[in-house]
Length: 248
Ligand code: BV8
Ligand code: ZN
Image 1 (spheres, helix red, strand yellow):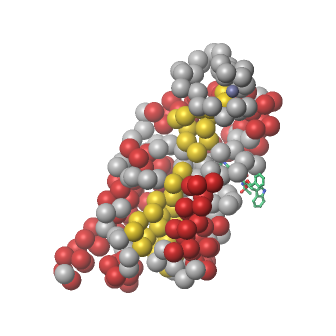
Image 2: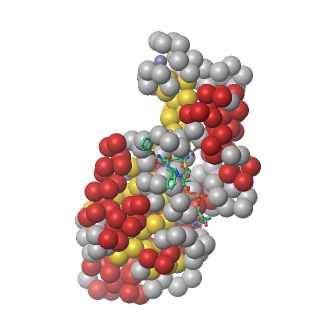
């Protein structure tokens, strides 16, 4: 995969980069994506498992699903794509990292101030009073809130739920003001997150897509690299550092 020289020249000149990632960036860490043929949604109906109504109807099944995913995520590590993004955060005057992922691998790789649009799979809270639930989740007993008796749920954003206001507002600001917007490892199908790349494009940013497949964003992107993020991102960082060395 060659990195377009024009992209490196642009990245060396501009001040503000925004990156949005999806499940694809964690694929090389061993975490299944949602919509790839072998993905999570291929086995489960998202409406059944990733929604409040699904949780209310099938709390035990939903908890099994999240405990299963927690076990997998717990044994996974960041891959070169996560580390490359962590390196990028110090290479620009302003760098914003937005993620749809709930696995916190960006933070493990050293990225700071990550805007988590869909929450995280590590924490839990009460469905009724919203209080955080700090205790261990029993694999057999459905957890309930000791303050109000409400059902405890994973702190991810389900379908039909609003995104965390602060994270989404900051992500919109990043998309509106950045010079270059990277869309990495996302099918660009889930809204309002998928809207951010179009917001950036319409605000005059250069849009870069890194994804082995084409998506609804592909035809609008200025640069498209149809390869794995774990291969492309370290190359971009390497080429940019070389270019800066030769031209400073
Ligand atoms: C809301 C839970 C508003 C956490 C998730 C009709 C039209 C438009 C919108 C809607 C509609 N009907 C309903 C909606 C809204 C809905 C939505 O967008 N639905 C879609 C499916 C049509 N959105 C919502 O409900 C959102 N809330 O809108 O609220 C509202 C208004 C008023 C009142 C109340 C509410 C909430 C959305 C969040 C849902 N939660 N998950 C969890 O369990 O994890 S969504 C789920 O999809 C994940 O969070 C994930 O992050 C997200 C996006 O998926 P991707 O990350 O893109 O992953 P995917 O598998 O799809 O793609 C992976 C890509 O990686 C692929 O392209 C693949 O090619 C690529 N790849 C693979 N390997 C690699 C790679 N790329 C690079 N390198 C590799 N190695
Ligand atoms: Zn409660």
